[in-house]
Image (tube, rainbow over all chains, first blue to last red; front, side, top):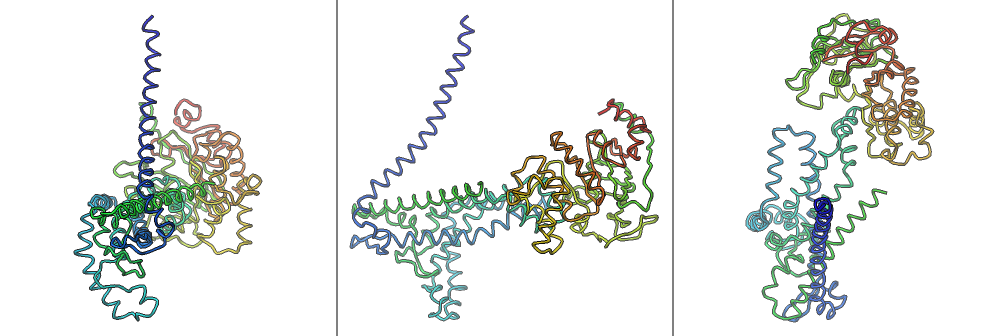
Length: 312
Length: 285
């Protein structure tokens, strides 16, 4: 008798316990997220209340005068991340397509490994490489020649304006592009591999050339999920701190050219947190953190909306 | 399984169509997946404007044989074919040298251009493979690959192809909907329409009805019989009734060999080999 009744009830108890366990795991995540948001809002509130909307518009960032405006870091963040995506995406598509469609399988193994290795390099190493290798090279071989060739009053002249030391928004975006490249390329490769064999064969069976198969069938096939890959890279580019702090030049000026020194939200916080003495300074930095949180969140929501619209 | 080995030794009976009718003529074809040989000296004469069915138990090599005809196996480095596949008298596996006793040439030579070959020998696969685009675009896509046509001409091609594939009435009001939104049977007929829109000479079908319900299958078969007027069809099928119903010639394969190839009427009524007799009476497979 005891066996008959204990069996199902034990299973039921186990089930309930398991459900509760999974539920609490999910809730811990939600609570952390909510706690983070609340802490950022509370911490950043004094600065936001003190400066009002000016906090987002003003480019003044003067710890001595206690005047904080976040326009410089905000624009710096968006521009570096955006530029990085523009640089990385075509390369990532090229890598993924090559690996899946054209690369001999022996070589594909090693190239894939190299791509994944790229993802494993700590960001501080990228930062050092950027500062000690890329920046001087860029200053000498790109900035200086452009400085002599381009008319400083032309559109291009303004775009390329800046101290030729290689530490600027453009080089920061280059480093970011290299850093997000393996993430995007790896996900895109997985997606391309997920295109069913019979669809690929059907395309070739129609008399498509390899270029037509890739561009007209396979890439459209993964388009929707590819947005996810791009967002993964964008999220990383928006929040990347160490490497950017090394090379962006850390100026709070509103960035007026590609080759101007600038700052991102993350680099500003990393640079100043230790030295922030006044409450308002700390609060301004926390408010910056809140802004970054919102930007990243908005990027994710945007991606979701885009994916949802494609489904309909 | 002993049964297999015994039957494989039985001599083959091949009653091919006349030479001048053969749009495709496979001779002594050996096929390899890496080191594994899947076809052994297979002959397959395909008569123009007829339906040729390939039957046989799973793994006998009928799909493999079909996949050599448009060289789709070329996508995979480890796979290779030896022998002759004559398409309008031109050996697709050769270096362009003349072949003795070949069927008459017709049309421009292929000269090793797989894209051109596949424009002239279309293929419909076992599972429906609509492309990720609208119904209209699914058909227009293939046409655009090979020809420049005006919008009006394209509209006409789309309608004609869908009509011939017995799908037009079901989709004419939703041509801009995704091809993936159709049912399985409709998707497969869309693939047939897509295949015939580029006006190939030969249409290869690899078990096109295996994933379809009986009603969809019937519609597909009706479409195929209609299509015989304009195309040569080679169909691989597990469904013997289907083969008997629609085909003019039937090839029975076993263990990578062509055991019997004859006009379908005779082949199904009076199989010449013990192996085919056992297979069609359900004692094998």
